[in-house]
Amino acid sequence: MSDTVTISARNVVKAFGQGAGQVRALDDVSVNIRQGEFFTLLGPSGCGKTTLLRLIAGFEMPTGGTILLDGADITTQPPNKRPVNTVFQSYALFPHLTVAQNIAFGLEMLGKPASEVKARTAAMLALVKLEAMAGRKTSQLSGGQQQRVALARALAPQPKVLLLDEPLSALDLKLRKEMQIELKRLQLETGITFIFVTHDQEEALTMSDRIAVMSAGKIQQVGSAKEIYIHPKNRFVASFIGETNFLHGKAEAGALRLGTGERVEVPGLAAGGEATVSVRPEQVRLVLPSDGLKATVGALVYFGTDTHCHLHLADGTEVVARLQSPATGEAGLAQGQAVGLRFAEGAVQRVED
Amino acid sequence: MAERGFQISRLPGFATVAIGAFVLLYLPILTLVVYSFNASNSVAVWGGFSLHWYADAWANEDVKAATVRSLVIGVSAAFLSTILATLAALGTTRRRAFKGQTLIYVVINQPLMVPEIVTAVALMIFFGIIKVATGYQGLGYLIAAHTAFCLPFAYLPIRARLESMDLALETAAADLYASPWQTFRRVTLPLLAPGIMAGAMLAFVISLDDVVITEFVKSGGQDTLPTYMLGQLRRSFTPEVNAISTMLLAVTVVLLTAFFLLTRKKD
Image (cartoon, rainbow over all chains, first blue to last red; front, side):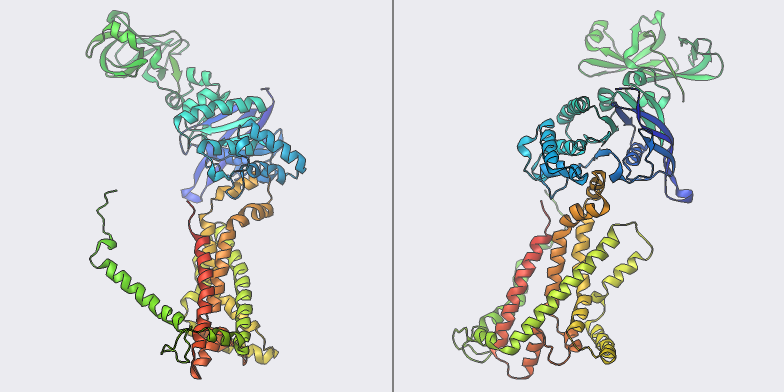
């Protein structure tokens, strides 16, 4: 990975419909995607992530803004002129062609000599471990094998950017985990920039170099998995990535005054107005009632390796603490018990609303 | 599945009615086929097994000429109407919905709705004017007329095929550097081929057995097989007609079987 920008979207707007019924699928989106990185567009359905992918592929034209590839404006270029290939959610394998013919399709359309087409097709079949299936029709393959053919077909012409539109959503959990590792391996081996669209936050966290969290046609935050998890910029990002607790109160110098009158230290917080902070469940510590925020134990939900302890502050605010399972037994927690809450150092993050 | 919904097959007498309907549908045809092997020259009295009506029909120059004419008209009309229908189907499915799209469907399918006798009279008068103006008397009129009324029969299976095709396939071809023409040539057309074949066969069968429009449009000496048989009705009616009908039936059954094989759903 380098700092060279491969894809750059600048103030991209995509509107569907006319007049009052117009919907902005993308609302002034700007983002730089670097060469060789695994970049994920993450968000709930309807957030505009697939629209952005389709604009980069050239399947649709933006209403406004520009898209650059290696510095050159490709905004209005048709898809067959862009050195960008796509792995479709439905795979879109050609049913009348064999596995090998599917993989060779892009190379043939580029007018590569027959010997090169043959060699590269063979190399791609080896890369996705489907040599034995070369002569089969795609309908004779399993879901996971079809997925690998779709990948090989899109990678064969050696695109500058590979676009992946929720490619794992049709696979069962076990196969999806395998394909996540497979995708990461292919990306490292080929060195091609991957732009991956998903609504699955776990998938995004495990595979991506950087993630753009999207909502309502806008990019909410861009950063590495760690940055986004530890320093979520706003409420949406904090709640969409992982689970979290929100505490709301009056902002004082370096602390938040809760509705219960208690103070929570928030380093760097300036006095004035209201503020919201986010605390991850695994950062909540249970202590003696006199040593922290006063709370009452509510429901205890057992998850195997850990237990979720639902706690209620004096003003009714719910806080979830994720405790390693043996600890609950030793602490002998019981419903209705009074406890104190403390938060790990650096765990309290101010978030915008 | 323990579905308790209405099922017509559970009604009393279902099997009886079904068998009765099949007998009514196929018994006359079976009779026709059987009597085509009749040795006597009556269409109603059995006089032993013989193939001589087939031999007679084969030797009959009028039957030969009518058969050739039917094939020329049928093949030409099927070919032309299938090309037009393919273009029409692409134009009505591979673009955004436009104003007047419903009107286009109605216009294309008009031959299915307008009474055939009306079309026949209209064509006779219209072609009459052209015949007077140009002096041309050839088979072109029949081919044009057959092309027109075969169009919806070719159009419907092609359109159905296009509508069931995953649009992502064409998007994928464009994504893999295929130009719009290459996408059509390498992806759309091969996937559409069964629909086109089905449309062409249906159009051919429809052309082959047309009587009403042909009877009105044809010039003297332009009998097709069905109008020749109609003419025979007015003269001596022998099992030769049964033999010709049986051969027509055989051709139609073969083509329609191929049609169903081509249009049946995979998986």
